[in-house]
Length: 113
Image (cartoon, rainbow, N blue to C red; front, side, top):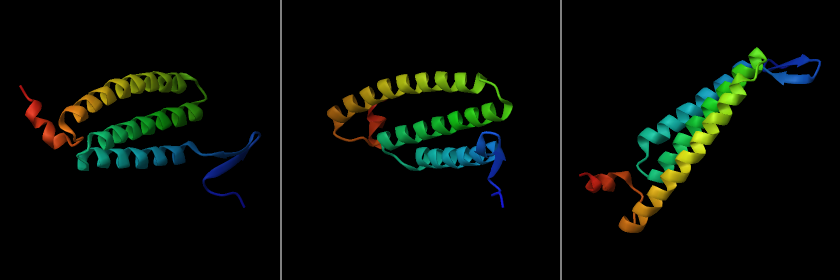
């Protein structure tokens, strides 16, 4: 009996794109929850990265369902932007941590002009 999550094709056993979409939705929800509930800047950055990876998984799942390459090209651009965001964001977090000795975003309200 063939499992419901996969189908047999000429290449072997393949997982349906809908299951990838469901996994991406769960990952995005976990990232959004972490972003909204946690007050640590590093955890918030990890949550944003988790959300970006969920979007990348969605792009690739739709791309495999359609049989095109546009989704993979979009993933490449998202990964480049995410790498730049992490570089700048971590530099800011390290600079603030050295100055204030905390990574809590609640205590950064003193940086307002």
